[in-house]
Length: 315
Image 1 (cartoon, rainbow, N blue to C red):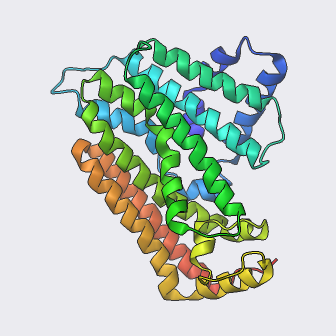
Image 2 (image 1 turned 90 degrees about the vertical axis):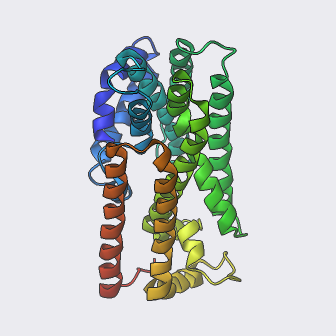
Image 3 (image 1 turned 30 degrees about the vertical axis):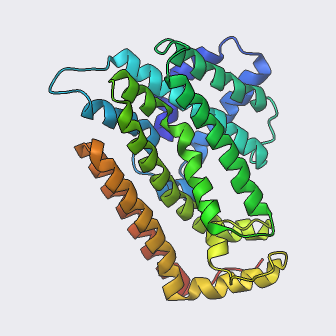
């Protein structure tokens, strides 16, 4: 994330130059905090390799779809669509942080919309309004918005449906696929895009389970039952009994088979992601999956050591 913010910094400055001063100040402060927190955020560090997959995926596709040494995609095109993809990421990330009250900066409401408009402007340079690209664009944004909202509702509700929750996690990846769709359509290979979406969903589910495991105790204390918390609770648990639920989670977290089972679920989705990636596999993509698998192994080993040396605190 820190590298990503730095890479796009000049374009952010150019884009917000004419924005109202309060909105500019809010976005600059927000991005500065993102950069400052990158090294202290355990959740982000657990998933960090080099760059987010949704920035690298269009580059992998461009490499795969450029035969020989002939470059199908100009540098300007690639720079622009990656910038537009980043704008979509900032748009949904700001909305999510505002909704979760991770920030109280209300001008970010308008800033988020500004980044969405910037993404529209950039993509319109390459795809006319009648292009099938725009159907993918609208569907991708809509799927992500409503999947995020539905997952949040399930976290806060008193009914559990882990299969549906995990499916919604996968759908949140839709907005991350827009630049990849642009590459596929530009190359005249729209059929590959279905494989891209499958990869993205499986990879997103892998990371979402890991995030939930790291955030599990904090979420339960706040009255939220994410996928990991629900996994460690008995089937007929009364979710409103917070203190009792923390004790159940503590007990089942210590159970080696249940603990390992959650990581097996992560590896299963990562394996599926890697399998779908095979249709556009390039060396850098293969290396990315290898590094991410190593991240998971290290996290599993660390949490195994952690749980054998202490128990989850009951707040």
